[in-house]
Image (spheres, rainbow, N blue to C red):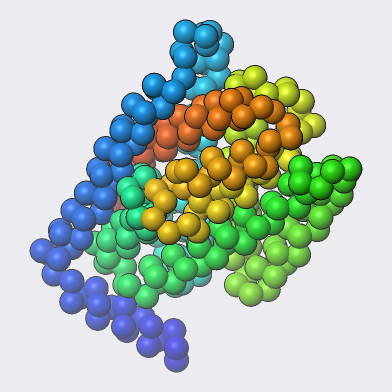
Length: 307
C-alpha cells in the first residue's frame, strides 16, 4: 500500500508541474551549473598564480592532464551511485540522464554555500518530472554514504598521527570496516544500497590515489608504500571540507587538515604545492566531467527522439 500511495503522490506532483514550471526548473539547474563554471574559472586563475610553471617540464604537464582525466572519469562513479539511490527511492532513470544531471549540477559545488550541487540536482530532477520525495531521499542517502565512506578511510591515517604504529594495522582496520559497512548496506537497502556503497567508496579511493600522485609531482617522498596513508589523509580532509557549512568544495578547510596530517612526511611548501596541483587536477577533472555530461545529454535526447 505504501508503494501505491507513493506512486500516486508522485504522479499527482508530476501532473501539477506545468510546462512553464518545468522550463524554469530546468533553467535553475542550468544556471547553477553555469555559476559553477564561472567560479571554477576564477579558481583556476588563482591557482595559476601560485605555481611557478617554468619549473615544470612537459612530463609534469602530461601527468597533470592524465590525472585530471582519471579524476573526471571517477565522477562517473558518483553519478552511478546516485542512480542506484534513485532506484532505491522508486525512480528508474537511464545512465545517460543520471550522468548528465550529475555532471551539470556537480560544478555548483564551487559556488559559496556548499549546497548548490544538491539544489541543482533537485531542480533538474523536478524539471524531468521526478517528485520531490525521491530526490530528497536520494540526496540524504548520498550524504550519508559519502560521510560514512569518508570516515572509513580514517584508519589509513593512523600511522601518520600515531608514531610507531605499523601501516598494516591501518590497512586491516580499513578493510574490516569496509566489509562490515558493505554488509550493513546490503542488509539495509538491498542490491541498490550495496552497489551505491561500492561506487562511492571507489570514487573516494581514486580521489585519494590521484592526490597521492600529485604529492609526488610536487616533490614528495615518491614512495608508493605511503600512497594508502596519503590517500586516507586526503579523504579525511575532503570529508571535513564537505561537512563544513559554507566552504565551497571544502576550499581552505581541506588544505589546513592536509598540512596537519602530512606534516611528518614533507615540508610545508611541498604539501601546499601538492594541494595546489591537486586542486588544479580536480577542477580540470570536474570540467571534463561536465563536458562529458553534455555529450551524455545529447545521446539521451537523441534516444528519446528515436524512441
